[in-house]
Image (tube, rainbow, N blue to C red; front, side, top):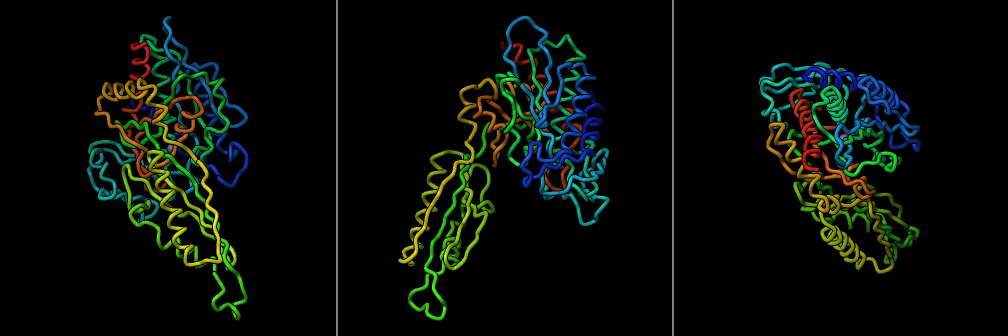
Amino acid sequence: MTDAVTDRFLRYVVIDTQSDPKSSTQPSTEKQMNLGRLLVEELLTIGLSDAHIDEHGYVYATIPSNVDKPVPVICFCSHMDTAPDFTGTAVKPKRVQNYRGDDIQLSGDPQQIIRVSENPALLDQIGNDIITTDGMTLLGADDKAGLAEIMTAAQFLVDNPAIKHGTIRLLFTPDEEIGRGADKVDLIKLGARFAYTVDGETAGHIEDETFSADGVEITIQGVAIHPGFAKGKMENAIKVAGAVISRLPKDAAPETTAGREGFVHPTGVTGSMEKAVLSFIVRDFNDDGLAAKEALLENLVKDVMADYPGSSYTFDVKQQYRNMKTILDRHPEIVDNAIEAVRRAGMVPVRGSIRGGTDGSRLSFMGLPCANIFAGGHAFHSPLEWISQQDMEKAVKTLVELAKIWEERS
Ligand SMILES: [Zn+2]
């Protein structure tokens, strides 16, 4: 088991599976199928005879139940793609054995240093074996660690029939990093009651909360006129937009908030004298907080507009996703069982919230309640990404324990 998870991980990270938000197909990039096909081959080798990949790039497989009593069907899920933020072509994984607690200089680019000061989690890894890149690509531990861990746990369960468990479905998705990982999943075919994405960071962490998220688009209609005759008449929409931006609350921005605080964040601005469009994302952990931030934003716009009597604005709110805790709280056994599994795997469980959305939150609202379990990776989406072999092994243990606990408690 020890070598298997790392071997698998190293095999998967060298396959380029970067997704592409500009593509309209699913999978967004054909190369994701290469990893999908390899996973199917490996699943068949393990003995999961129904393993297959569909035309959208989703991999499905089943570990059949080995008990007579009914146990809820659970699903382990992770994503095959890597983030568009940084290249995933020609990944060269490097191993730091018996880590000593120093900064890690990456061999391909001396500028790239994984610093302990920026990665305090490294101090929990003394004596462990750490895997990094050479600094030229991302690593893709997000989420190939999850794939390797689920695959290794599956093999372990199949090879050890004395371990009792219900039916476990495996699901590997494309295009999670571009927000489309749940788009084409066939929940009927999957047939699972509850699910776990294995896509979190630090060992021991379980996440059952995401942001609630809206997008806001503000369109400002100014008063356009020839600049030579503009005195007392022109209301330049670009300047109105600038006034709105300058009054945004400084204490409710992504760069000034953490933990359970939400924010209002401008993501785009286009404009001419006649018309300007401002795009925002608004985030909070509860719906009232979200509404309050939107009201604050609209009041601020109204305030600015008072100085421009000839101009007008529209304010459009679009729902993006909602905090999955609403759904997960109706099925407390999902998180309770995960907490017990983490404990039995030798860690102190930590419950957390995700400052973002996940496919798990989408799946939860589509009818498959889904919490997120750690995969062990750190510094996602960057060339400084790293993970330890020992944390991947802990994740494998957690998944095996989770399978046992669902059987025991049914
Ligand atoms: Zn991920």
